[in-house]
Each structure stands twice: as C-alpha cells, then as structure tokens.
Length: 448
Image 1 (cartoon, one colour):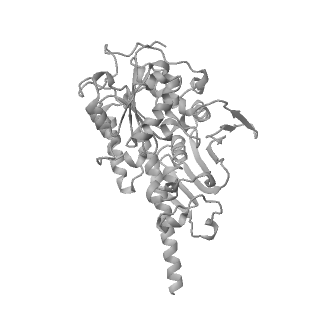
Image 2 (image 1 turned 90 degrees about the vertical axis):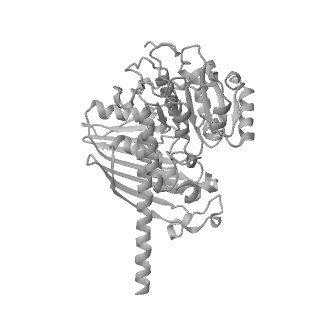
Image 3 (image 1 turned 30 degrees about the vertical axis):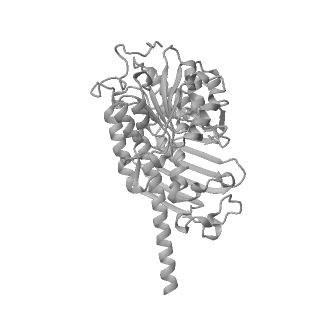
C-alpha cells in the first residue's frame, strides 16, 4: 500500500496552515467499512514505526494517568504514540493547569530513550496560552485530549476544548477520550452540537472507545457480516472490583456522573456497536441503592458519609431497551466484587449464533456457537492491545492522504460517542425515576 510523505504538496489533508475554507473530506462520503479485518490488528511489539522522515507534531491536553499511565490500568496514550511514530514523534506542547505535574512527567520522559519526542516540549496551562506563544513550526498534526470529561463536550467557555481546537487548528485531527462529557443530562444537546460542528468541518476525530478495536470484537463483527446475520439481542454485564476504587469522586454522582455514565459507558457502547441505534424511549432501568439492605458494602476504601446521600452511587443498575431494528438490549452494572479483577461479559445473539466476549479488559476470550453444533469454539487473543490499535488507526488515517480504501476506518466518531453518552444518561435517569416512584409508593402506603 503506497503512501506519499505528508507535506505541503497537493492531495494532503488540510491543516491549520490552510484557509478554514479549504475543501475537507466529509466522513459521510467515506467508502470504508465500519469494521476492521482482525488480521490487520497487529500487536504493538510486532508493529513497525510508520514510514516517513518528517516530524509528526502532537499536542497533548492533560498530563494525568490517561496520557502517561499509572499502576491502575493499561491507559497510557503517550506510550502508544511513541511506538507508532518512533523518532518522528514531537510533542510540541503539553497542556495542563497543574504545571508542576506536567513538568514532572516530561522530566521522566526525557530520562528515557524517547527523549527526542519531549526535549523541546513546552508546558502551558491552557490551549489559548499555547496558541499565543506558538510558531508556525509548532503546528500540530493531531491534538490528543485526555483531560477530565467534565471539562469538554459542551459549548461553554472552559468546557469546550473541542470547539477551541476547531477554532485554532481547523482541519487538524483530534483524539478525544471517552465519555463525550460528564455534565448534567440537560447538556446532552450541547454535546451533539459539538459533534455537528466537528462533522461539518470534516475534521478527523476519534473517540477512545478502545474495546471496539479488540481483535475479539472485530472477529465478532466479521462473523456477523460474513454470514449476513441480523443481531437479535445483546446482553452485557460489568461487575467492578470496588475495593480497589479509592477515588472519592468516583463514588459521588455529582462529580463523576455515576458508574453507568463514567464506567459502564464502554459496554453501553459495545452494545450499540452490535445492536445499532437505541430507541431511547424504550429504556427502562432499576437500581439497588446504597441505603437498601442488599446494598451494604463491607470493604469500601472511601468514607461515604462525606458524600451527600442524594449523590451516593447505586450498587447495581440493570437496564433493558429496544433497538430501532427490533432487537433487544440489556446491561447490568454491579459495584459488588472485591480484590482487583473485574468481571465483564458481552453476549450477542443472532439466528443460529451465540457470541460471548469474556474479560475484554485483561485477556479477552471469545466463545462462538454456530449452527450445526452445540459446542462452543474458544478463541484467545494474546498480546492484543486495543489502545495501540485505536491510535494506530488514527495516525494511519491522518497520513493516508491518498485515501486508500484499505486503510482501516476510525470506529468511533464524536457523534457516535454522543449517542452512547445519551444511552448511559437514559439508563441513569430511568433508574432514578423508578427509585423515586418506589419511595413515593412506600410513603403513601405508610401514610394510609
């Protein structure tokens, strides 16, 4: 597959150096498939650096665990960029209001073999500060947003990073962490308004629903497509190990938007990826709350009494819905396990087929039952790294100035992410309405 080096020459994707009125490719005209051949998803340790010799300028927004890693999980976008781009990577700016933290992580990077990517990186509190102080040679090819979701996904000043990127760097690709936002449900239309602006600009934008890039997930897609199947049902379950969650904000719905919106979002997204669009009016959910007998947790690492009762998170949320296709979806999220390992599964059913994805975060296993047999095939995917795959696909699309039809498509747009965000809020709001109805009925019965 041929690629021309990226540059100012004809055919290049427009950048911030061009007129905002330049013609940009619209995602709706793409002929690429919304899935990836699993054989094309190469483990990071076997992937070659992308070709070319030009510097690939990147701006990182956020100097926290998502961008630079921690012991809490496999998140570390900088690590994947280093492996994909090799010596071409140049991080021209790191944006974070916590200047000391940002400076510290850069110092650590400069003490390693990837020093060349970070030795000239400058730290700024805001994107506007960078824009005021940048030179033409600092213009980024991509802006990577790993800041907390409550600071993005809206049209409001200070919480509108996507709009700022579109303003200052028209045509420059974006990668946005999930979820699209975590503001109140009343702000969901703003998230869709942001998506509309991104679509209208023709800007490449990928959102970090990395489970879509799992080899196991793409194998499931391949089975469905090759056998011309119509999904009948999706059944998702996510049981977290709450003992290892010591961040007070996570336990406070007013700060994190609750476990369905903040954590269960990945499985709501995977459900939509297979089931299609959801009839939001059909969503119905129930919850087990903190003040119910079965909701008592014995190994919490935070003092829940410091959280207002109305903001304490549910222990279990169980939801069902209808897809526009007629299929049925369900999702159960549990704050129940102790230790460190989570227990997560997704089942997808179609005529004659049962597909069950187990343990997608750590060591994915896919069980497949086909027509003609009651036995399940078991498929494992050692060394698969969906975090690397999503970054690799993004960069391939940025570099693909010839629009090669074999280049893998970005699997989660901002608009698509907004639809997942809308579903998570629909689940939370339904469970809260049903809880309120139950309490009112109990009060009425006690007063009778």
